[in-house]
Length: 116
Image (cartoon, rainbow, N blue to C red; front, side, top):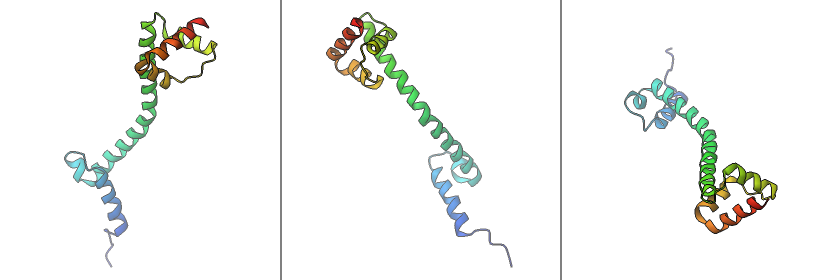
């Protein structure tokens, strides 16, 4: 009896990878082996970059806070140090949001930081 190569499970597995490789170009989309390699590499990149994204956002928030602090003649490090001494526990995301959208509230925070 001949060996059954195209069982439903293996076909389903191949179709899954080919479906995931849908946006690729050329053989990366059509050939199973290259499609699988491409998809696996893409999945590893997406896992890695989900972690890296958090650091990128933190960098963006710090840049925004620093720019807003410089408008009030204060450096970022002195601002954050002053907030810690004044026991103000706002995270960088909310500080950046205030710096961009609510200038008056941020000015008050700068005054608090300078006073501490």
